[in-house]
Each structure stands twice: as structure tokens, then as C-alpha cells.
Length: 108
Length: 115
Image (cartoon, rainbow over all chains, first blue to last red; front, top):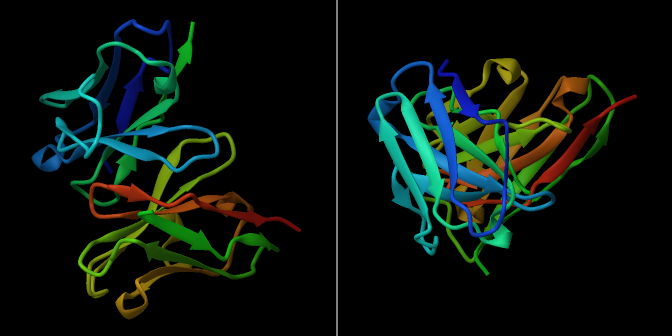
């Protein structure tokens, strides 16, 4: 199975700052079928990015995704208070689909 | 409102069975792959199973193979997960999610396996 390793485990930043979250795959992800999801306690997870770099419908353009080989990045250009949550990368190119262990983005 | 709504969770003894349902509201699931994902207490997300649009392709994570069965009824806009031989480690919130890229998620149903 494809193992996704996210870093850092926790990211402490202030509103207005830039956040960079990383996800490394243990092997190539088919057709860059890599997604990023945001998850807040007690809520449904939310798709942010699919296909490594395509924004989900209605997602603010401060969110962006990129890929370089087996390395994937989610960037939030200017943090808003509602952006503090746990973020997961996920590959859906090969079963079993797998998630990274998550990055907790917390308010500094 | 466009949403997926799970039901059927609860408390069950080890070795018992439970059937989860997921119904589309304001959206149709009939043309899409559908998924089940779970989150154990204090843990991350784990993909459990998926099914193609007409139900003739199904895939599972190894840990549930032979115990869980995913199915769907497109006429009822519904997805199901039959869970048998439940173990303590199956305790989790179970989410359904629509499409291969998990474009829409439900709110989740809590399953607790305990004596």
C-alpha cells in the first residue's frame, strides 16, 4: 500500500501568516490522484484539493496545492481564523486508498 | 441542502453485527463511486471500502475483508455497510463519502464495540 507521511505533525501559526503543509508518498501516486481534506472536531471532513492542485468548488483561492514527484504541498497563503483544523492528504489512485496521519494547524 | 446522512450506528458487543446506511439528500449517488471511511477515537482517517456505480466492483482494506460488506441501492439513493464479527478495534466514527475524490462527506455515525 502507498504510505503517505505528513509534516509537520503540528503547525503553530497566527492569522494572516502563510501555512505550508507537506505530504510525501512512499511510491508514485497514480495520475496525481492526491487530495487534501480539512477536518474540524464534530464536523464532516471537507474536500479542499483534488488531483493534487485543483480547488474544490467554492474553495477560497488562498488555498493551493502543488506536486513534485512524490512530494505534495498544501499552501494557505494568508490564514483566516476558520482555517485552524486538522488537514489530511489522501491518495485515491490505488486501493487501498490511504490517508496521511494528519497535520494539526493550531493558533499560535 | 446537499448532504449525505449516515444512520445505524450504536453500541454492539464484540462478535456482533451492525448495518450502517448513508442516504443522499439534495444529491444523487447513482452515477458515482461511493466510499466508507472511519476514524477511531484519537486517531486519523482510515479508508474502509468503496463500490462502483452499479455495485459490481467492491474493494476493502485488509483489516475488514471477509467481515464487512459494502452495497448500494441506487433506487433509494442509498449506500450500506454490513459489519459482522465486530471487534473492539472497529470502534470509530464511520463516514460515507461520494466520488473517488471524496467530494462530499457525511457527518458520520458512531459505532462502539464493547462488552
